[in-house]
Image (cartoon, rainbow, N blue to C red; front, side):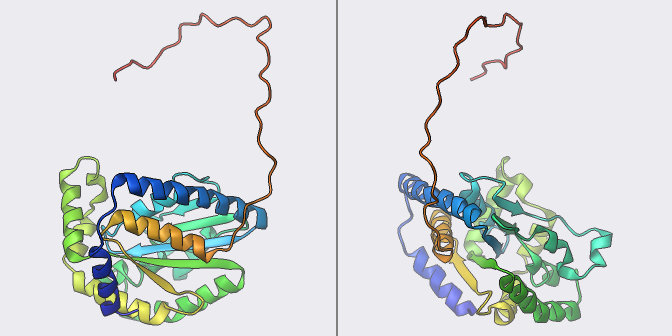
Length: 273
């Protein structure tokens, strides 16, 4: 998908009226129910799912991942956000440090940034050579083909944010004590290189948007719509059904018998609120 296509989709979404918080939460609740159904089906059938989230800083990757995972089991939906590579990892085959995190049967692994760091931030910030980038772009479709052939369901999402909205969000991080941890020196450096990132993204799409590993672009200026759209699409890509299970009924609680409430001097948390 080219740059013009992503801009066209982003402008189309921007024209829509923003969702109210009440409507957003109502729709999100319905999708959360479906995500739980998907979770149980993935466990029941032993499916292996790998979801990749990429995009510029401030595009909303973290919020989208949180919306997906906040009502499901962290043992099934595993979120992977790797730190910078160690000196040892820098000498390995590039994708090697990601391999141990690939899903086993009954798992959905979500990568908050992935091996595509090489095609994005590492390339733009000069952490690798152009020769290394070219080699990566040639190799990664083959790696992803092997993943899919092994039975992994691979989904790749690019969250597309506009320059103005990215500026608003990053400035918001500066002025909000709850979000300042999200703003790193790397974010500030990469912010000024918008078009370097655009060129890197376009070449990444051109070489890694394959029939077995397509990229799905999510216009994300409207965070609420972006999250709902991502979850809805993810659900549509993995056929699932209600998992057979017995109806749950709480058993009777045992009688107190000779038990008496303890008079131990417990240290209670002060009621500040």
